[in-house]
Picture 1 (tube, rainbow, N blue to C red):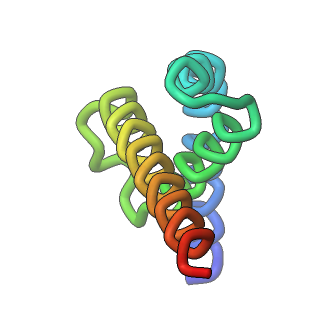
Picture 2 (picture 1 turned 180 degrees about the vertical axis):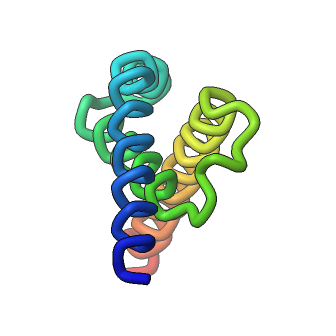
Length: 97
């Protein structure tokens, strides 16, 4: 049983490493073209890889590139929504006094 779990983890790890190698630079470039800073792009890319690595069945994804770009796009959208909300809250706070 332990060997089966280790084998599955090794296969999953290898799949993740291969995917990062295949899509890492392109995905970072895609994200970087849509956010204002390198730091934002790197944070979003890290979130994408984290979500990918936490999937139970990576092999069930039909199009890995499509999945990665869709998740990246959603993370970018989430980041802009969060920043917009923060700015609105800051603005409201400044004018309350």
